[in-house]
Length: 598
Image (tube, rainbow, N blue to C red; front, side, top):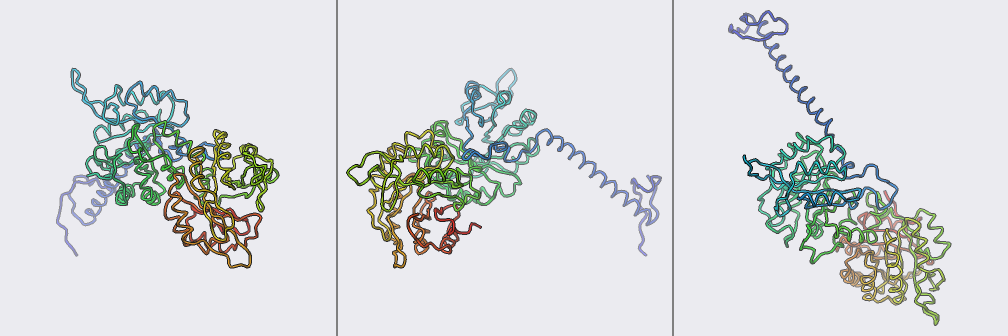
């Protein structure tokens, strides 16, 4: 039997309080004392945990953790309004609000969805006694005439919009979060975004980079309602310089965000992000919790060699819920106008999973009766053919009308009348120009109705001779120049003249045809879709796969003529779908040969 030395231990023994202060003289007494000490320790930990969690729960009751939907105004929007549902482009941003006058002007806005943005810095005020205060500054460090406390109170009192605060360093960060927490009741329904730089950007040395973990802990402890916004550091003036983002920048940012159990908005210069979209796309693919905020200062010199069509590549290629556009008002309005008609059907119709195979079509809606049926039907996109009245006859006029193919015959149903009927619906539009002569008159009709064309508009022209093609193609330079001069805000559909005869050895698309088409597409800054005859697609798919890999601006639309007897095999369409990216190939073909969509 083991012997225990007599030890004098002062404990609180739950079974026997009378033992307090008495010497332990037996093994049983020692065990009782030990168990009592353990019980007391556990009780202390439980009490501390209860007090802490009660305090935290009370804080969370005051400042609830809003869902991502709440933060972006998606909740409560009309889910039936195509093109306007849960869309980051609907938000208007007001930045450089470092003076009372600028803030008051922004607060006078009538926009329903706005974000008010300010830069926060600690400044030493030399009063009778020096004191540090959080003041609003411009992006180039010009100190404003308003404190953060006053700024917040003015925004809250207006009852409008959300708040985005930018911090260049840790000074004053916790103090600013405390000011937000003190106003939690007034900010309960207000999106609050907090921006810090946590990774080194292109050409950066890491100077000014901040500890994401530290900031996150401060937010979680002080004001958990805030939305994290992480950006990169840049050398002086390099945010609009020539250096580019690469995969390494994305991997670094991903490593920062990966450990955080909350949504994160990644902030990046708009033009730089557009030129490196393949890398940003890779980053967004890594997690559903990541969003992208594209920003541009008022006088951003990087736009010299870029345009809003570069941003359209991003918008057409990703969920509209996950991209935001903090652009100067004039640039933002220009982008919205371009996106309203040159935007992807996947965005406009809010297609699940951005799957182009789920976009439905009604082909050759050229007559009044056919169009009436199509407008009552389920098709999303309506395709029709346009030529000049009396095309190719001595009675030819300059009036664009709807045509019938094979042979080409025109009607008295004008393009203007056709558009007026389509505008009573929410259908998208694809117009197939059947001659070089109709291009300018038809584009002028579209321009006249520009204010009402808030939907995808595609303009198709067959510009090259393709497999088994018998008809002469239209002049490429005339088509592209006219579009840019008259109505540039469209998706340009480029096709080949083609044919197919049952029982014959039909030619497929050749490498020469596809490479020549790609050279023409490089001249186009709008989105481009390549119109490919469906019956010939599988035999040539290696070439079209190559074509799609040349640019994220490109898509392919497989089509079938209504008046022909092309023998399309469903197995061929299944093959094309299996070999291609879901968001890059549209199917304007009969329903019975549509590929399986699962």
